[in-house]
Each structure stands twice: as C-alpha cells, then as structure tokens.
Image (tube, rainbow, N blue to C red; front, side):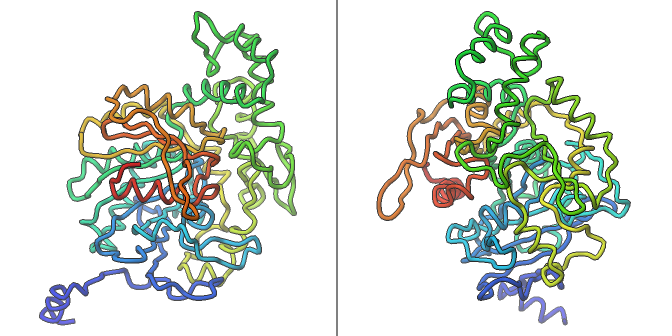
Amino acid sequence: MGPVLLCVLLLLGLSRAAPQGHEVTYLPGLAKQPSFRHFSGYLCAGPGKHLHYWFVEAQSNPQSSPLVLWLNGGPGCSSMEGFLKEHGPFLIQPDGVTLKYNDYAWNKIANILYVESPAGVGFSYSDDKKYATNDTEVAHNNYLALKDFFRLFPEYSKNDLYLTGESYGGVYIPTLAEWVMQDPSLNLKGIAVGNGLSSYEINDNSLVYFAYYHGLLGTELWKDLQAFCCSQGKCNFHDNSNLNCTLKMGEMIQIVEESGLNIYNLYAPCDGGVPGSMRYEDDYLITHDLGNSFIRMPMKFSWRQNLFRMPVARNKVRMDPPCTNSTAPRTYLNCPEVRKALHISPDAPEWQVCSFEVNRSYKRLYMQMNDQYLKLLGATKYRILVYNGDVDMACNFLGDEWFVDSLCQKVQVARRPWLYTEGGENQIGGFVKEFTNIAFLTVKGAGHMVPTDRPLAAFTMFSRFIKNEPY
C-alpha cells in the first residue's frame, strides 16, 4: 500500500489496524454469525510466554466505547469461563455444541478483552512448558500482554480502559493496575472486582460469621468457636494457634467446604451431586480446586502439601471447581473446528477450565490488597467498584465489605438498596455503599459468578459503573 493511500485511509478513519489472521470469520455453534467483529489469537507476555485472548468489539460504536479487560481467577482458571458462561456475547449450551446469544452481554456497551492467564491456563502456554509462577510475575506478564494487545490493536490505545476480574482476580487486577497506572500511554479509568479475594484474613474471619448466620453451623459449634477462637471481642479464625480452635475450625471447614454444599452459591444445587475430595472420570483423576479460604489451617495445609507431591501426569489429572460442571465449555473448546476458528496454536494444551499444574505450583505472595487499593485511591482519578454476589462462600460479601471499610475512605452515599428494572418493574438488585472513588455493592441472590446467576442485575451494575452513573 502506498504512503499516500495509507494517509487517505487514516484521514478517513478506516485504519482499523486489526492483526491479520486473528479475526474470527466463522464460529461453529452459532445459528447466525455476529454483526460485530471478534478476534482470537495470542499475546506475548514475556519471552516464550503466549497468552490466548478472545476480543469482542462493542456491538455499537466500538471506536468510542471503553476497552474492558476481564480476568477470571483460580489461580489457574480460564477467562473462557467468563466469556462462555457469564457475560460474553455467546453462551455455551449444555450440549457442548451450541452457542446462544446473550441478551445481557457486556460487549453491548464496551469492547471486552478476555485473556487466559497465566501461561499454562486454558490455551495459553510457554515454550519451555514450565508453569510455576507467582503474583508479581503474573502482574507483570499481564501488563506485557496488555501492551502487546495495543501493539496489535493501536486503534484502541486512546479508549478509556477498565481492568476487571473475579475471584483470584481480586489479586490479579489491583496488582496489574499498579503497572498500568505508571504507564502514561494507557488511559486507565478504573477497576472492578467481583467476589474478589482482597484479604485472606478478612475472608476467613468473615466466612465463619456468614456460615453461622446462614444456618450452617448451629449454636453449639458457634459457642465453641467463640470460646476457643475469640478473646476480648476479637475472633481469629484465620491462623489461630489454639488447638481447640483448630479442632473446631476443622468441623466448620468440613461443613462449609466438604459436606456437599455449593461453595460458589449456597442456595444452588451441587452439580454432579455431593462430591468426594477426588474421583475418577475415564482416565482422569478429578481433584477440586482447594480454594483460597483457610490456607493457614493445619488440615488444609497438609492436604495442600499432599496435593503438591502428587505426580503431575498432566494429561491424567484434571482440576474442576467443586459443584460446577465444565463439560460443555470443555467439549466445545476442544472441538478441532473451534480450535481452528479461534486460531489456537498446535502447541497449546487441551483446554481445561482450571490448570492443576498452575494452581498447585502457584506462589501466593500477597496476603492482602490494601496497599494496591490505597495507591489507586491516592491518585484520586480512578474509580473502583468492589461487587459481591451475596450467597457466595468462596469470597463472601461480608469479607469484601469489611475490606472496603478498612480502607477508611470518606463515605459519600450511605449504604442503601440499588434498583434495576425487570419486566417494567423496579426490583432491588442489592445494596451499595459509596465512598470517594470506591463503591462496595452486593448483588442479591447471586453467587460467585454474578452474571451467571443474575445477568440483568449484573449488566445494569456494569453499565452504571462504565458510564459513571449513580448506582
């Protein structure tokens, strides 16, 4: 192309410089191909590290719409879960073949970039196949991947940028934001974290209260926990050295995490029935994500150590989140036609919802996110939303509410119900408390995956956040 013609195209605004070979031109499973453009391929996240992304342009006015990065958590779980089961434009159906359009897709109002991070998760991989990593390395790798995205899609570099995520995204997003806020070429406007891990200690302490007041523990166990784990009105359910407390916490953990309750949604059934800690399916040993609660408690610690010693026959161990069914997305994404449509590398592993290898070797370096939040708030130019489905037990609402309160920001609007409209009627979506530049919001009746459980309420919340409208 001659320089004169290129100049003309630039002036006409036709320079949508999307990378060649990344555009998805035909996606299996859809009755009708979308009117918006979408792209799938790999971002460079450092030497030899290839992170798979799936980018969907906004359904209207992509050039002027914000760009939103989305990361699921784990650590070691795939953002394709967020795409195909939460707020992506196409939702996987139980047959593992069909996709249906999502009426409440977040790309109705924003360009959404889904990234599978870190390497070893989903279709992401590294050349050396070594997948041990940690919080700081992942934050830097995610930043490099984001920079590579803007290299491939320079037309989006000036758009408003939001970083969003869920669960262990409560660590990924604020630590990534530390990198992004130092880069003047990126137009960061804010972050949103859903059912995020913000502090191990607060998450543990609050979960015991959540469990008791949701009728799970009974008065006898509650009295014993109070007697052995609390003194002078302060309870430590997180890393208490009292042996009696440890024993009673063992009973509590057994009820909440191991009895067959759905930890991601207390009131939802457990997919697959009440699970054991391990089971076999075909040639695979299926183990469950150990979660992020009570990692300092001896029984959880020893179970974790035993898991670390297991030989990681990579193609024979599968880690599924408890009480969830990942068969449909796994079937769909491993279909050869789908892998081809999404430009998946032949070097990429078979897709699993979570990587056992990444999770078991992951080093957790941050025990709380206070410093990262205070740094963002101290800049006084970023907006933060911390939102929680209020029936999740993996990262419960009470813990994140305590965490936001602990940041000691000035209250702007007292805690109140927020409303959304369904079928022409106003309904209570949950409760919201607004501080200077940060809001804490609950979504009533939603579990860990808020957009899955309450799609319209979640879309309303997201829209108000992105458009800076009152909740």
